Amino acid sequence: MSDNTNPLPQDDPGDLEAAVIDVLRSCYDPEIPVNIYDLGLIYEVRIDAGDQAYIRMTLTSPMCPVAESLPVEIETKIRDIAGISDVTVEVVWDPPWTPEMMSEDARLELNMF
Image (cartoon, rainbow, N blue to C red; front, side, top):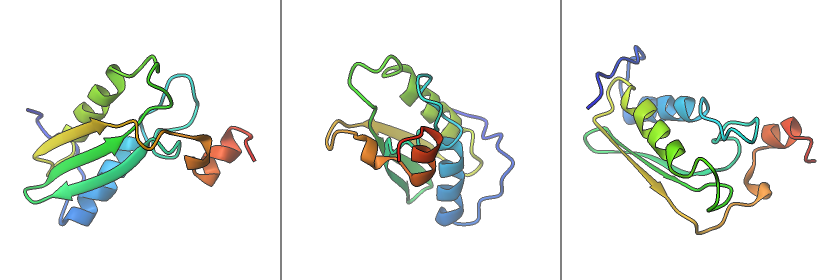
């Protein structure tokens, strides 16, 4: 288990959820210069009783070269958030990811108007 070294104080599940989203915004698909949260790969972020984080996500395709490593990276980084007791990262393929799932900022970054 992690040593929870992230110094951010977490007073309620909303604070933990915001901290998780901040961590997700620090993770990138190496082929696309936009973080995975704004890219629309994150379908759900939930903090359950006991401060357990649940992330439901997808990838741009099942053949994505980081299909095995990215979920592990996400889990490891979220475990380092002070107050998180456990993490589950579930990769799903339904609904399939499409470029329309990107945030407006991501579309601007990639010149996809």
